[in-house]
Figure 1 (cartoon, rainbow, N blue to C red):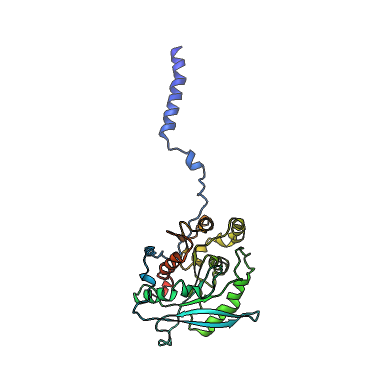
Figure 2: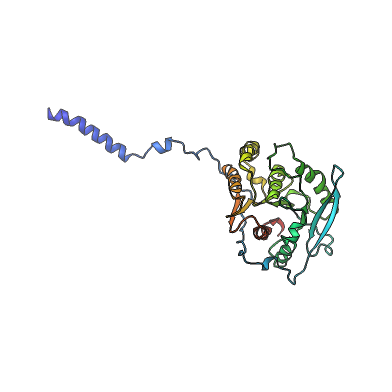
Length: 309
């Protein structure tokens, strides 16, 4: 009788021992949340992003005894017949190296500002003069348009350009390409903007990656009441398995830790991250101010247009 009672116990113990010794099958049978995620193949090596200057550093935008480019103020007429103004930075050597063609950065101002603020407050021309003299940035044209009353914080439907995008594609780019020795391929065009100008990057640059190869967002992102709409409308584009091949450089989004746009910036960045879009996410000190935007331009200008360095 004792033998028959012990046999089931022995068999049960053996089964438990065999289960413990066998490789666990449960985790493999359970698909992880990331099991259906296909890692996008990087289109280009990731550049090394220089560290930001210290917040008290003013030397990087000081006017130094180096070769200087020049800034000219020009006017164009848009499709509605309105005369508009641009500030345009032409790098050192533009007037003497007459056969050379240059990449173009389209640099956008913030709300309540205009095309003159990136030189008057941002010292964009001094930043580029100094970087070019040091061999840290490629000579480039910088076009600073006036997009006040054109820019919208509403994400557009793909294929339905907003007013700002229409003016860029129909008026600003043709004017620049016709007047200056600008390279006219997407790899030679970048678009950047601060605050409200960040919506130019997101609404115009992102929806026209066939025209702009590099996107740089400074202190900007969609407001909470627009974020769901952005996710919905941009999903077909970001779901493209080859989306990273369409960015010449990783998407750049920078914001200050006390910036009023901090939360909007981070939540907008999360939409890109959910789709595996390569990005430079930069968190700096300070807030929504020129102290930061000058530093972001200094940092990004050093990685722009790497193909012909």
